[in-house]
Amino acid sequence: MTGTIVRRSETSDMPNRLALTFILSTVALDSVGIGIIFPVMPDLMREVTGADLATASLWGGVLATSFAVMQFLCGPVVGNLSDRYGRRMVMLVALAVMALDYLIMAAAQSVWLLLAGRIVAGASAATFSVANAYVADISSKAQRARNFGLIGAAFGLGFIAGPLLGGFAADWGTRAPFWLAAAFAAANFLFGLVALPESLAPEKRRSFHWRRANPFASFSAIGALPGLKRFLFVMFFYTVAFQSYPSIWAFFGTARFGWDAWWNGLSLALFGVAMVIVQAFLVSPAIRRWGEMRTAAYGMSLDVFVFGFYGFVRSGPMALVFTPVAAAAGIAGPALSGMMANATPDDQQGELQGVIASVNAIAMGLAPMIMTTVFWAFTHDGAAIHLPGAPFLLSSVLMITCVAILVSRSRSSDTHEGPHNLGEHP
Image (cartoon, rainbow, N blue to C red; front, side, top):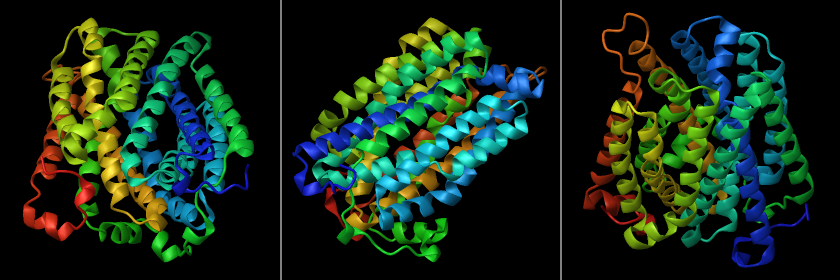
């Protein structure tokens, strides 16, 4: 099966369904590996730095930023490599390095070794972007947004299991979740080694050029496509806003509600359950009813309210009850991804996903530092105003920016941007 080429024209055939199933399981296991470490991050950062919670959150931001910087630099390289050599090889290498990274973090006794592990992982963090390119390869244009929604659902499933496992594993120490994450990544690599077919036919591959693989050249190539530049800006602000969850949620829960690792894990798992339902069952009906553009705008508009709520909520049970509303805003992401993929030629899907990875990397590099700094400013001893939810209020403002960019498109710019299948004007 490893030598099989999965063609998009055969979308209804069994090979495509099996390929999509594997990709979804890969994304789910990736998410387990990521989510499993979130509940222990406050304790781990305090353990290796000897600092208080507010200062430890800043170190958490440094680790996340280093990962994102390397992802920014290497994302276009990985995307272009997958357009040249196919998706399978790139994905398997990424999974192998991911397993190694978790082993490093499991053994690390200093924040500097943790930092080194994050740098190595960021350089090879290709699995999610290549998975998206794979889905674009095997999906028709009409199916892409729906299948991107399934990827979101798979990610949510992993988020259900990951934080719960991390919270329970914390009873055996702050390193136990990393050993589990390494085992999941290694098992996923072995699964892919025997089960993953190639999705990009040789005739659709293009030459690899280093001059085009750097982030700025890739931005130029993708940004020149009709409609893409504006969507990249929206993707950037959207990602910065959404990063308030992984950047400070565990610190927020600890500071605002007095939650421990188990409760932080449970809250993230509940969010994962709600996201699975939304991504698997609401994205496709929303797009059929409103179109991709309106679906993205409506989801982001709901996020304005959601982040505002978390900015001021003082009750832990209320925060948990509000989870389905927060997850419902997740219809925006797949709609935006579908619009971008549909505006991109087949032989540039990997490059597109590499550029998206770089845009996300910039956002993910800035967001943790911004969000944890805002959190520190409103929670450290002597803060003029004690407001652990302040980062969420910043996210609400950023979501307003996203909606403004989406709805500001004039009819004349529609004409100049080209394809009309990008979605309706909200």
